[in-house]
Image (cartoon, rainbow, N blue to C red; front, side):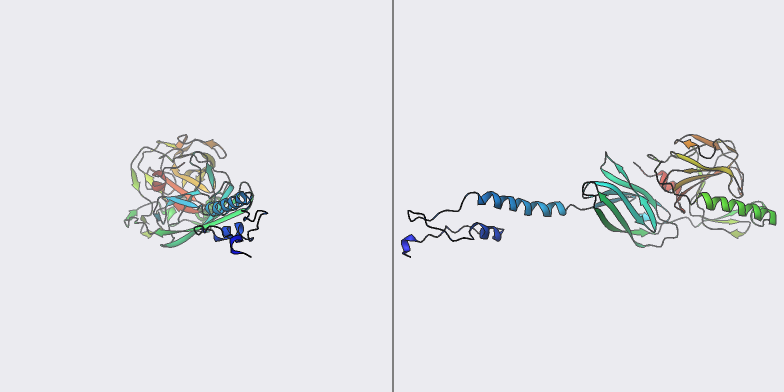
Length: 333
């Protein structure tokens, strides 16, 4: 072919996508009737642009991460924890597994986050523990999974040994009293292990009485010279007859007399979260009643194994006792 009939396209700067150049110039140029090279057909360009946009868009979408925050940021044994989760796509539902417990997440439309209240048992050793998440894509209905590891540290609970004196029937019970203790134990095993699916609590938890505390969670106690396990609640120094209020919304799970607890009320706040109120002189609610935060549930007293009038409050999450003071300090959705 004569040199004057050969045509070579002007060299372009190398594309960031080399395959695009190959797509545009994969055929050798043809000669027109006038002997001039025929330029590439214009419809090739929209195709290339479409493919380029597809390639650039997909990785960006896939790179959107899961985001998980905790409250508090430092996890401690014996303390509650609130998990906040932002998913990479819209979900129909979100569940999780934490320290062997099942979590059901609720969605906050205003904050656009999923949240669940959980806890770390007093016995949990310092170390790293994994939160497993499983959700369902709201559009495609396909499952999504994610996991994140958190460090649990040891909390500094008081080492004070409290010397207390109670009636002999609480430390050396008779056969008849042992029978009563066994009956109370069966009631607690039947009721306190329940996990209802729906969340009833809403917003912050409030103190049941306006009074100073006399003993805290985690302290060691000695009754009549016999060492007991760590204190599993919070004691308020109040005289007999002080009104006691529900700490949050829920349903009355128990409202009866038990051997050690005396007149007690247990409120089910949903998803395994309970608040317990012991040693009351009088009950103002019955089992099955719905209650709101701040509603009167009873009057304080000194019934059961108590050294004097006071209110003992406990927080229990899926059979794990948590520090009530820490729950009361949390800002909750």
